[in-house]
Length: 130
Image 1 (cartoon, rainbow, N blue to C red):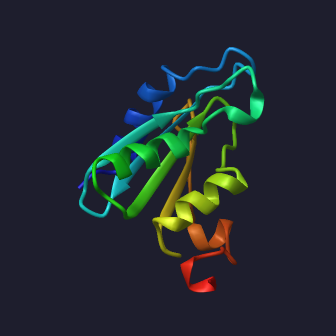
Image 2 (cartoon, rainbow, N blue to C red):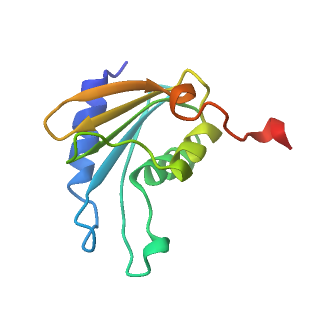
Image 3 (cartoon, one colour):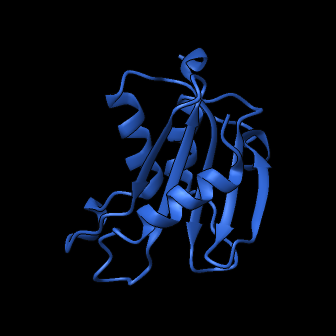
């Protein structure tokens, strides 16, 4: 079983590989799946700004590519005092999580805050809404 400190270390390392030549805002993310595996991602910017990829989306893609579909925990790290998933990423997280999934917000100094998905996205859209 991984601890948030393990997720933190992996996310910080992945953050170093972020491609952020325009904003200079590097973000790393690390997922702990329901099976106990970890998947990391970093943000990848593009000169056509809407075409970039958030770190959370990259980690989710890695999880899906490995054949897993359930997020137990996700940690996001950046060099700011507060980093939370954007609305688009919250919806992506919700697709593979439940209301009790933990979302850790961390800075590069090791400060970590914990939220439940239900706190950050209390009324998410889901398959049951179709």
